[in-house]
Image (cartoon, rainbow, N blue to C red):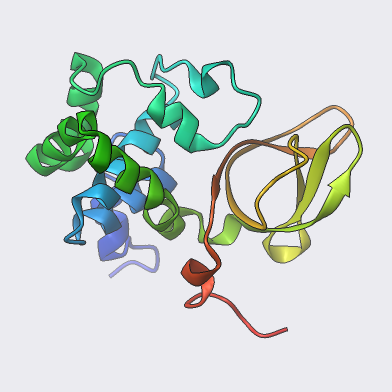
Length: 190
Protein backbone atom coordinates (compact mmCIF):
# COMPACT_ATOMS: atom_id res chain seq x y z
CA UNK A 1 0.00 0.00 0.00
CA UNK A 2 0.74 3.65 -0.13
CA UNK A 3 2.59 5.37 2.66
CA UNK A 4 -0.35 7.74 3.07
CA UNK A 5 -3.52 5.75 3.71
CA UNK A 6 -6.50 6.55 5.86
CA UNK A 7 -7.06 4.59 9.05
CA UNK A 8 -10.37 2.80 9.51
CA UNK A 9 -11.56 5.73 11.64
CA UNK A 10 -10.40 8.16 8.93
CA UNK A 11 -12.31 6.24 6.27
CA UNK A 12 -15.52 6.40 8.33
CA UNK A 13 -15.33 10.08 9.27
CA UNK A 14 -14.29 11.17 5.77
CA UNK A 15 -17.77 10.16 4.60
CA UNK A 16 -19.55 12.37 7.15
CA UNK A 17 -20.62 15.83 5.95
CA UNK A 18 -19.08 17.78 8.82
CA UNK A 19 -15.70 18.78 10.21
CA UNK A 20 -13.46 15.77 11.02
CA UNK A 21 -13.37 16.66 14.74
CA UNK A 22 -17.18 16.66 14.87
CA UNK A 23 -17.39 13.51 12.73
CA UNK A 24 -15.07 11.78 15.21
CA UNK A 25 -17.41 12.73 18.07
CA UNK A 26 -20.45 11.36 16.21
CA UNK A 27 -18.65 8.17 15.11
CA UNK A 28 -17.44 7.39 18.66
CA UNK A 29 -20.93 8.13 20.04
CA UNK A 30 -22.48 5.70 17.54
CA UNK A 31 -20.47 2.95 19.26
CA UNK A 32 -21.90 3.71 22.70
CA UNK A 33 -25.14 2.37 24.10
CA UNK A 34 -26.23 5.66 25.70
CA UNK A 35 -28.38 7.56 23.16
CA UNK A 36 -27.84 10.85 25.02
CA UNK A 37 -24.16 10.82 24.00
CA UNK A 38 -25.18 10.41 20.35
CA UNK A 39 -27.79 13.17 20.66
CA UNK A 40 -25.18 15.46 22.25
CA UNK A 41 -22.61 14.87 19.52
CA UNK A 42 -25.10 15.38 16.67
CA UNK A 43 -26.73 18.47 18.22
CA UNK A 44 -23.30 20.00 18.90
CA UNK A 45 -22.14 19.25 15.35
CA UNK A 46 -25.32 20.86 14.02
CA UNK A 47 -24.78 24.00 16.12
CA UNK A 48 -21.13 24.28 15.09
CA UNK A 49 -21.78 23.50 11.42
CA UNK A 50 -21.24 26.56 9.24
CA UNK A 51 -24.41 25.84 7.25
CA UNK A 52 -26.59 25.71 10.36
CA UNK A 53 -28.86 28.66 11.01
CA UNK A 54 -28.97 28.10 14.78
CA UNK A 55 -28.89 31.36 16.71
CA UNK A 56 -26.04 30.59 19.06
CA UNK A 57 -26.04 31.45 22.74
CA UNK A 58 -29.58 32.85 22.66
CA UNK A 59 -28.29 36.31 23.68
CA UNK A 60 -26.42 34.75 26.58
CA UNK A 61 -22.95 36.09 27.37
CA UNK A 62 -21.72 32.59 28.24
CA UNK A 63 -20.50 30.77 25.06
CA UNK A 64 -21.18 27.35 26.62
CA UNK A 65 -22.27 25.07 23.75
CA UNK A 66 -25.03 23.64 25.97
CA UNK A 67 -26.91 26.94 25.66
CA UNK A 68 -26.72 26.79 21.87
CA UNK A 69 -28.14 23.26 21.88
CA UNK A 70 -30.95 24.25 24.22
CA UNK A 71 -31.78 27.22 21.97
CA UNK A 72 -32.48 25.05 18.90
CA UNK A 73 -36.11 26.01 18.21
CA UNK A 74 -37.44 22.51 17.54
CA UNK A 75 -35.74 19.16 17.41
CA UNK A 76 -38.07 17.92 14.71
CA UNK A 77 -37.08 20.70 12.27
CA UNK A 78 -36.41 19.45 8.77
CA UNK A 79 -32.86 20.84 8.63
CA UNK A 80 -31.83 19.22 11.93
CA UNK A 81 -33.45 15.89 11.01
CA UNK A 82 -31.69 15.92 7.62
CA UNK A 83 -28.37 16.67 9.31
CA UNK A 84 -28.93 13.95 11.95
CA UNK A 85 -29.76 11.44 9.20
CA UNK A 86 -26.67 12.34 7.17
CA UNK A 87 -24.25 11.95 10.08
CA UNK A 88 -25.99 9.39 12.28
CA UNK A 89 -28.52 7.55 10.13
CA UNK A 90 -31.79 6.39 11.65
CA UNK A 91 -30.22 6.13 15.12
CA UNK A 92 -29.15 9.76 14.86
CA UNK A 93 -32.63 10.93 13.89
CA UNK A 94 -34.24 9.00 16.76
CA UNK A 95 -31.72 10.39 19.28
CA UNK A 96 -32.35 13.96 18.13
CA UNK A 97 -36.16 13.54 18.24
CA UNK A 98 -35.84 12.36 21.85
CA UNK A 99 -34.42 15.78 22.82
CA UNK A 100 -38.01 17.04 22.99
CA UNK A 101 -38.23 15.08 26.26
CA UNK A 102 -37.04 17.29 29.17
CA UNK A 103 -35.27 14.50 31.09
CA UNK A 104 -33.54 13.21 27.95
CA UNK A 105 -32.38 16.77 27.22
CA UNK A 106 -30.97 17.13 30.76
CA UNK A 107 -29.01 13.88 30.42
CA UNK A 108 -27.80 14.90 26.96
CA UNK A 109 -26.45 18.21 28.28
CA UNK A 110 -24.85 16.35 31.20
CA UNK A 111 -23.08 14.07 28.67
CA UNK A 112 -21.96 16.84 26.32
CA UNK A 113 -18.34 16.72 27.53
CA UNK A 114 -18.21 12.94 27.16
CA UNK A 115 -19.64 13.24 23.64
CA UNK A 116 -17.21 15.95 22.50
CA UNK A 117 -13.98 14.75 24.13
CA UNK A 118 -13.00 12.21 21.40
CA UNK A 119 -12.78 14.89 18.71
CA UNK A 120 -11.28 17.65 20.83
CA UNK A 121 -8.95 15.82 23.23
CA UNK A 122 -6.06 18.11 22.25
CA UNK A 123 -8.14 21.17 23.13
CA UNK A 124 -8.76 20.39 26.79
CA UNK A 125 -8.19 23.61 28.70
CA UNK A 126 -7.27 24.04 32.33
CA UNK A 127 -8.21 27.34 33.94
CA UNK A 128 -5.14 29.23 35.08
CA UNK A 129 -6.65 32.41 36.45
CA UNK A 130 -8.36 35.65 35.71
CA UNK A 131 -7.38 37.90 32.84
CA UNK A 132 -8.32 41.47 32.08
CA UNK A 133 -11.79 42.55 30.92
CA UNK A 134 -13.73 39.94 32.96
CA UNK A 135 -12.16 36.92 31.30
CA UNK A 136 -10.26 33.79 32.28
CA UNK A 137 -7.04 32.32 30.93
CA UNK A 138 -6.82 28.65 29.94
CA UNK A 139 -3.78 26.55 29.13
CA UNK A 140 -4.23 24.03 26.31
CA UNK A 141 -1.95 21.30 24.96
CA UNK A 142 1.46 22.09 23.48
CA UNK A 143 1.89 25.26 25.52
CA UNK A 144 -0.98 27.12 23.87
CA UNK A 145 -3.26 29.41 25.81
CA UNK A 146 -6.72 30.88 25.19
CA UNK A 147 -8.95 33.44 26.83
CA UNK A 148 -12.61 32.90 27.69
CA UNK A 149 -14.68 36.07 28.16
CA UNK A 150 -16.29 34.81 31.32
CA UNK A 151 -14.96 35.51 34.81
CA UNK A 152 -16.72 32.67 36.67
CA UNK A 153 -15.62 29.92 34.32
CA UNK A 154 -15.21 26.16 34.88
CA UNK A 155 -11.89 24.62 35.91
CA UNK A 156 -11.71 22.36 32.83
CA UNK A 157 -13.17 22.92 29.37
CA UNK A 158 -13.00 21.79 25.77
CA UNK A 159 -12.30 24.79 23.54
CA UNK A 160 -14.44 23.66 20.59
CA UNK A 161 -14.29 26.92 18.65
CA UNK A 162 -11.59 29.60 18.86
CA UNK A 163 -10.33 32.58 16.90
CA UNK A 164 -7.35 34.88 17.17
CA UNK A 165 -7.94 38.62 17.34
CA UNK A 166 -5.83 41.39 15.82
CA UNK A 167 -4.02 41.65 19.16
CA UNK A 168 -2.75 38.06 18.72
CA UNK A 169 -4.77 36.71 21.65
CA UNK A 170 -6.64 33.47 21.02
CA UNK A 171 -10.23 33.64 22.29
CA UNK A 172 -12.72 30.87 22.94
CA UNK A 173 -15.94 31.37 20.98
CA UNK A 174 -17.59 28.11 22.08
CA UNK A 175 -16.72 25.70 24.86
CA UNK A 176 -17.97 22.65 26.70
CA UNK A 177 -17.37 22.35 30.47
CA UNK A 178 -15.65 19.12 31.52
CA UNK A 179 -15.95 17.16 34.73
CA UNK A 180 -12.55 16.21 36.14
CA UNK A 181 -13.45 12.48 36.12
CA UNK A 182 -13.68 12.56 32.29
CA UNK A 183 -10.01 13.52 32.17
CA UNK A 184 -8.65 10.64 34.25
CA UNK A 185 -8.11 8.38 31.21
CA UNK A 186 -6.24 11.03 29.22
CA UNK A 187 -4.37 12.94 31.93
CA UNK A 188 -0.61 12.69 32.32
CA UNK A 189 1.41 13.23 35.46
CA UNK A 190 3.36 16.47 35.63
